[in-house]
Image (cartoon, rainbow, N blue to C red; front, side, top):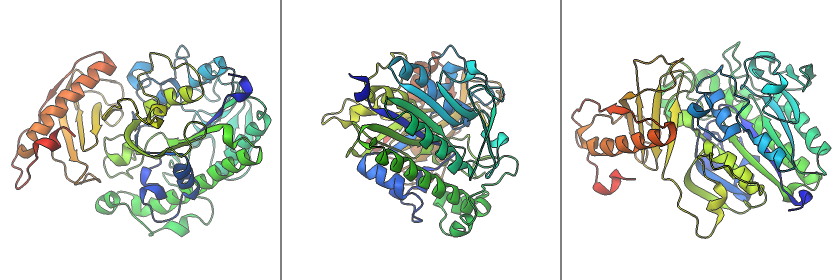
Length: 449
């Protein structure tokens, strides 16, 4: 393939964005017209999930295509081992110019040293962007570690930098990873600071059913959160407009996704780190060569699938040690067998593991382990079971119900097999204590879904 015929690749990566902030997932506030159009004209990955619902582990998986326990980045604060090849390394070997802009969160230093920059040629980033900047004061660092002040609201400042990179590299294939902080909270204030005038538009307008039932901080924070999502979507539109004006649209793959979701302190004492859809389900759409008019795909897609997807779509070799699957295979008229489950590792709030199938959510944890310093366990206890068809917002925990004993038995075996496959160790799982289940019953056909 001639270098100039290779598609450019852009990852538009948000932080802590729920899947149901998007119009194509039913949000009524028109927050994401650009994402919705991209999903409709490209390929909408309707059921997409993180493999680790916390920043650094998810980002390490996104950069390497490996699970968090394999990279060692099972919690925040662990620097990415430079011995692991990243997307930047693979794309550079394929003749691409690579660039990283925004939040990194895979080092233990600020600014990030060159050897910890993941192999990217161009660098304009901060390890902890939430600590080096404020909504209207964006400080990032260049390749040499020198501070760079970017004007404008933080989303716009990073988008401006991305458009400059695209314009500069337009004549040769490039891979750009554009990583935002928004709609993550600003740590210092524990708030969701939207652009001026945006929070007011969306306060008390729409509350997803889980937050309406459980509350948390959603009444305080949802307006600002939605305002941040709106500005991100406007930024996506600006990137797509830049590609169009530079005549790059037809030859550029754009992936939009997030590292994890947000449950607004309803499931534990902060915003993520749980097995629930609000933590693990994320928006995702991809467009460009190979993905145009792909329609809505309802297969279960994991964040771990995106690195092989991007390499495959660019015509580059996918390493055998990447456990994910290329979404490009779903574009075929007769797609190959696709996994009917996604595996989630959970840290910092607990040492936990979860399995998500089309119908069921099953999660276990080990309360005896240190939730910060232990990456895994050899023995777990059942904690959650949800029927996602009848209870999509997970308001009724069915674990231990006699009616669902056979469901739990089968999911327990599946989860143990998955842990063994990924972590190369086989733990035990203690079943929950049985309890009466009233009128509930499960048919044999439902058990395996």
